[in-house]
Length: 239
Image 1 (cartoon, rainbow, N blue to C red):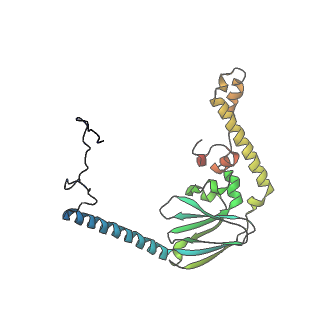
Image 2 (image 1 turned 135 degrees about the vertical axis):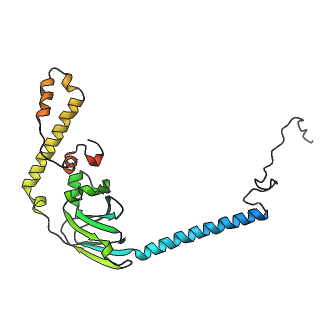
Image 3 (image 1 turned 180 degrees about the vertical axis):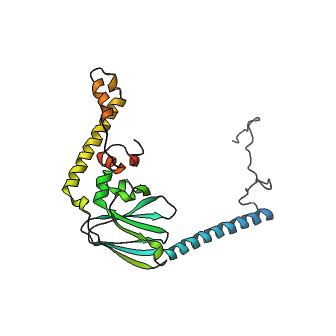
């Protein structure tokens, strides 16, 4: 039994090519000569871009310096690199004591090596949690080594042997005690300031104590000291 078509049923719209307006194909498959030529030119340009990208990768690989770093110290070091156009250093690797590590770098980079334990103490967490550090704070840490890769030939193989004795302040117990007092003072002052910010000064019983906060003069300290104490610093983008 044949199906009766409704007299007012809408006709299904047929897709037409955006170029020649014919049915059964689109611009991507249009047989018109001009569209065939446009597609050929597009494919040619796309292939040219792909080949250029491959060539850039090959050229960059030829300039890559294959580097082996040997940590000759009895402590773990953290390596960072700085590209000449950046104002920060980025974490590159961590090398255990008396252990070699190989990786690639470029002539545009400068490598920095620090004591991992010092970084962890200052940041309050592993260096991996802060993979990028502002250049302004490089001088805060003990520098185990600094190497300008532009002095090495592109595509060469290099070996760096890093050995440097720790400074006294990293081994001095008196310095450790001083740092502990700094942490205590900075944390206490921060908590008092937060109580003041939350309105403790409006409490008649606490008002005399809050007024004394302004009499506290903190000695000179660095953002690293603040970070070590666990209070907001430039590393947390807040004060």
